[in-house]
Length: 345
Image (cartoon, rainbow, N blue to C red; front, top):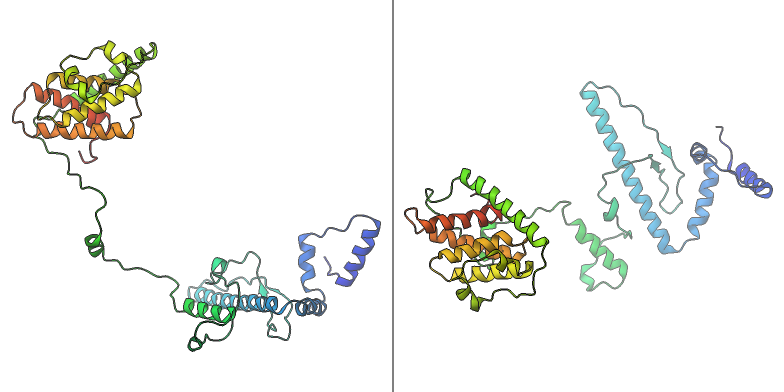
């Protein structure tokens, strides 16, 4: 497209406005108009510039200075890349298209500005780091507090210039840990039990499959019945209730919330005992087989306590007996099925 003068284009727009819709310019048309009548464009720009407030002109000057710095940095990087390619035998770099904007006014904006389409600069003032107000001169710290906003900005910019672009903190973790105030209780690790008393992985695999099938069967049975309005077994009545073996009817009379509450109450009672009786293990097994998933956080914590209690009793055993067998069942349920074992176990 041949370059058209701004004056003729303005006349064409006026004529087109009188006759019908205005003319629409393509991108190539607009790019061609960049260099048309540069002197006339500069004259229009100066009229707009001197019509602005002094503060706005000062900000505009800062934008031109920043753009000029970017141009110089791009030229340096381009020369370095050319030199590097020559040293590597890569030949000259293809010449880049340079778009020269109009020159600025006589107040210090007299440098030609250079733009590149889709330019990405790594200048440190790009983005959020670009200053909103450009201030010149050095701050006067001896004059006391800043008397105006410009002096305040000078001091802020001076302090910012003293900081490195990247600050790396060197921390001594040993000193930090020594001075750290403990805010969480230190929970001991799970007790270590003799390996010959712990269930084997093969037995544990088959047992957990049967336990899962038992839970599914109870879930189907309970879903077909409406539980009565019973209350969970309280801590005060657990000792009397634990003397009687649990039945399916007793468990079905509880809803999901009551079963979980009863399980927590039984675990709280078991923590105070030195050993667990057969009826205690039966109740714990029955409640674990019927508690709903996913577990509440309090129920998970109680199962973790039950696992710790069972392992603590197993750690004192030397040979296999009935109590070891019952505790091994509870350890597999709490540790493996409900996931209360550590990852390392």
